Length: 332
Image 1 (cartoon, one colour):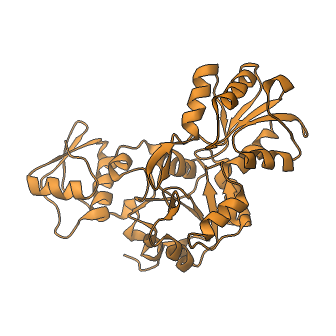
Image 2 (cartoon, helix red, strand yellow):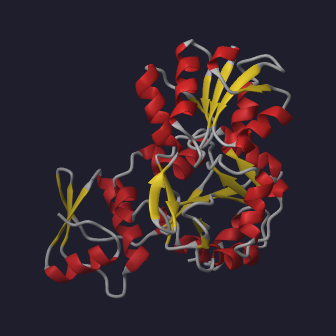
Image 3 (cartoon, one colour):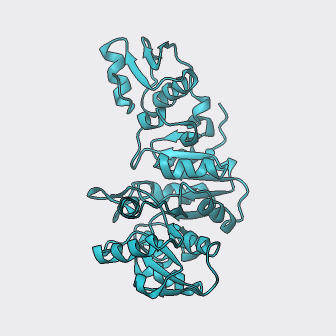
């Protein structure tokens, strides 16, 4: 195994926030130090459209991260760029979201309106904790008129210090049900926001880091970028084992300390071989190498499962079941 750290193979880090660096108002332990020690430029890429870039940067600085507004790329920024592909400059747009989202649209030259009766040419939707039924109603009326509808992101949940709360995707689902329309999505898993983040860092070899398969990892693969999945947020090793090809991370680690470890230590394709028995979609493990536990074991099992097309696991005895469970894997 090469001793070259994972960070040395890349020229920038495109890092998710919620669930990767922070949980609401609390930092993930060790995350700030891991980024600082990587020696790489960092772009903080977030699907949370409820804060302006400057506010996001200030929020992160308050938790120990070294970041300026220019280092932040939000899905709201990406949505404002994307709306220009659908309407003329200066057009009226209805923003169903936070005031900071409205400010971004105004700064880009659009006329922001608050009612469907004002004839908006497009609808922009993003997360706001102050959003009301009346705001959704105006968005519903405008969307049903047939104008373009651009969602900043479709994360169904938002990790916080209290647990998972409704994300913008849950609110998008409400308007989807009320309009029978599908939005254009600006943020992850769309590739655009990550491509823009890489351009911001002038990076040709970025590493995407995140906790969610359906946004961070899928977005990275859509953009043709390698991805490190960390286990500090939403998804688990078992989720990754069962993930379809377009959501399979390149690397898996417990947390961001993996950036300073050898690249092969977290790379799934470099994980140790295991002796397995496969019947249909079930992979059974009767023996395990001594000392292989935790995320190391998870990577090995995931690699074998992907190779055999297995989506469920069985254990040959209670001791193996316990080790698999301890690695975050569900045993039938």
